[in-house]
Length: 476
Length: 104
View 1 (spheres, helix red, strand yellow):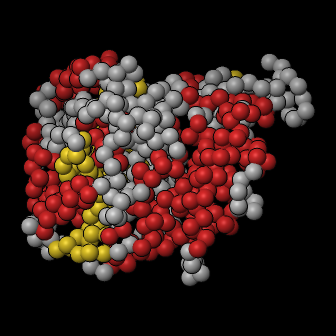
View 2: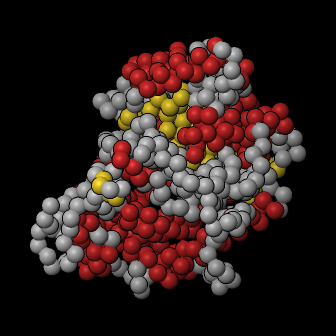
């Protein structure tokens, strides 16, 4: 598959490409009154960037691998051109004084930022219903959610506004909306992509991820944004391969694990059937499919919903009215803190801060937080053993269902269960990708490929092969 | 280990959140509903686990205790609410919790 970002197929005119993106936003009603995918845009600035890019192209100067390609970034990734609100009243209209490394690298590669996308507040959610600026809608069916928390970015790619978008992952916030919207979603290895400028939610889990219309597009963007960054001490000093080369390498000789815990009896049999068809297609290309077991899978959601809120309660302490965004005055310093935070945070963020503070508080730390960290170590060790035993890739459904209707998940824990197949990769720090594998009742279904630490190459080999075998069926 | 109303108010105080009185019963119910799913972890044998999970097992090299400067896109004056003589001006606040009103 050759995506629009292939260097042989760059847009004929950067000016047209950016103008088309804005026209498409208007056509599909991507703003607040419509699908509510895009929160902030600056058409004049984007057009200026496009003209400047086009002048370089016309003058024959090297424009970069993404020259003139428009994209959107999730609203929790710092940009100096547009606000970074994190979908929260706390940071409404906040403009960062510095920008994320991923944004800088994309600009240096020629890409043009055309908007910031809607997301669950501070990336906490699985449906983009928890945005302070209203819920986002799925372009395939506006009565349904686009997934979350990076729902706006997934929807923008699905609605053909942009060929790629940036999102962020803490427990599946790129792969799950990619599955719900029928696009490709990549969660890199922890440390593969700089978190500098990504507003912190749970620092041991957070990673910037990529949405693409095709595997190829996502692979190119990953090449651009990955790699060591002096501004993020957790980035790895490991070479970044040319992920595009994965296309030529095929699947011959690869071993793909099918973990039985990701195919429970409760899984919709039609989703299981689409997954087994995908596995058969990969087997036909030379891969061996091996039944495997990951017995700690059931522990992942409880672990995640202790570790992530604990880290969030610490990270979000900085929003106190003194430094960033919203400030509600009070008679005392303490009053200002309390009033600002209560007015600025929405219900899900409040719930998670309370939960995180509880599991870290005296008397409960050992029973909850320490225990969760220990079980997390068991989950990570299980993945390491599996990959060390000769399994190159693990294939699973990305989500247990297709996109659900707005308001369908009113119980917080029921919403958390959406992440059941994706949180494991975040807890273990390994890479994962969601690829469209078919449709159910007209709605997209995603299949997930996970690989060992820093083996995104294996992940892309599987994804290219799967996408190639499914052909047009892989995309809307 | 059920969360009581007092637990919730204590945690809210630690988290610097002023909760609406009518939200308290709902939050107690929700937190207990979430935490009951966490009890499964208590049955897991972690006696062999030493230390917490390290997501950076594959990397995290030591580095000089320094680093590149953090480049700002705009001068501080452009994003500070107010500056004087190179310092940020922040709202004047009483320094004691029992003080009543701040004076601008």
